[in-house]
Image (cartoon, rainbow, N blue to C red; front, top):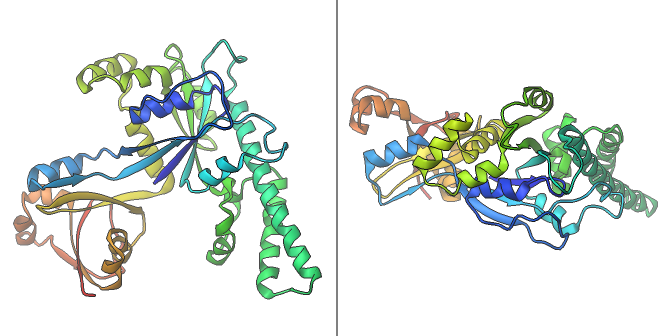
Amino acid sequence: MKIGLVGLPNSGKTTIFNALTKSEAEVTSYASQKAEPHIAIIEVADDRVDTLTKMYQPKKTTFATIEIVDFVGFSEGTSRNGGLPSSFVTHIKTMDAIALVVRNFGDNFSEAPDPLGDIDTILTEFILSDLIITENRLEKIEEAFRRGKKTVELEREEKLLRRIEDTLNENRPVREIELSGEERRIIAGFQYLTQKQLLVIINSSEENFGKNSGLTSAVDAKYSAIEFAGNFEMELSRLDDEEGALFMEDMGIQESARDRLTRSAYELLGLISFITVGTDEVRAWTIHSGDTALDAAGTIHSDLARGFIRAECFSYENLVKCGSEKGVRDKGHFRLEGRDYVISDGDILGIRFSV
């Protein structure tokens, strides 16, 4: 999974990035459009994987991971002045979700914070960027029509793009359009920014953290929202676990920034985890809720999906309750499932296959 941190200059994106990833990327009070994004991989904490590691004593333990990308800040009006930077668009198209970081703290470089206004500004830039992409493609289709290349495929694409153009002109994102599987295929290459799922990170000061219920509710009415005390949590990330826990308790923070982001991202994208176990490796794998045993096999390796026979399956809860795989079998909780079996969060799988 990839999550891109996006925001206006001085919103504290890099501070949030450091808090999430325990990195030490330079935090500056200005933005350079030539700057490259910061990238880091974080592990998805999972108590189940810790418990299974103690049970199986594997040679290797692998947690699910999230790639966090901290993009350079961009200013209002960027899209009108030739569009968002090509490097920005190229990178952000590969993200599974976008986390908008909005400033909720005072500084010496900006006006009073306006988180809701900043959200509107950023989303307007995204809509304008998507509109430019749509209009450019429609111009090419119209040119093809003038040259007599009026195919059924192009007519379908034009009809869909007109719907998208109308929606964007109404200041509405592409993700609000109900699309069929075929329509999603047609526009897959465009990777519209407003089609991606959004998470809003309210970056508050240490002084006002936890005192913004009205703001959080207003954001939550439209988007998934998390509040961070960015500078404070960046400093927390540099402490050892025991010392950090004491400071978190003082601030009323129940989970680390990383764990809160992870949980929100999984909920937003509809993700779950299944686990493979053994003496060689205990590993968590990420799939979408509703995915099947065949999808899970393909996530591990394409050969497992190609030669899929059956999935050996039992739940984490039953394994812990029974104490061992033998206990799971003796209690009748061990199952053989077909390719259409829908995976549940925490399922432990072994794939039988033949290639």
